[in-house]
Image (tube, rainbow, N blue to C red; front, side, top):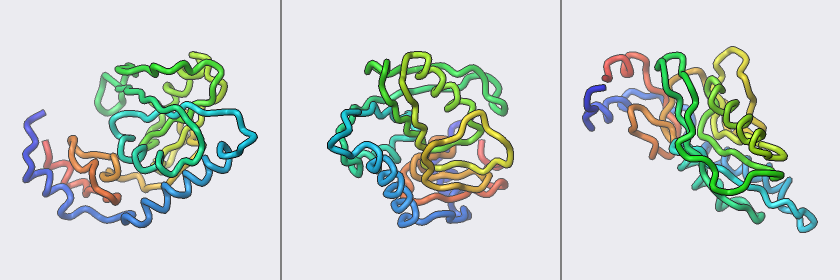
Length: 194
């Protein structure tokens, strides 16, 4: 891929459509925290889950969610990538596996988006194969792609349309993960990028 200049990065969002503003994004994160706190923040609960953030897209979501969780937890992260055909994905490769022991534990996986679902389905199965008692998938955005996915999220912040979205951890060519809101890039703006 050619070098992507900052002027082109700015052009990507110039005509982008605002889907969810910062208030809607933060309200979604708060709702997700409420769901997790309702289950795990009980003095009688002796279950302290392992929370795994999926890098790098989940870093913004994770950083906003963790301070709102009111129960003891252990945090770690994983990094997985798909190699192969750009359109169809390919083999899932683990760049970073959990350093923490997952055997017999409840594991909460935090990710920015559930798109086609292949990678998260693989992550869930791998964690179960490693001995996790339960894997809870918590995704900030679930993309409505109009077809069945190989896994479903247990906790969803927002359902987004089947469009190319940036912000709150999601990027275009490595840019705009830092936006506090969610914006849809126009297809014609994407097609003019490298």
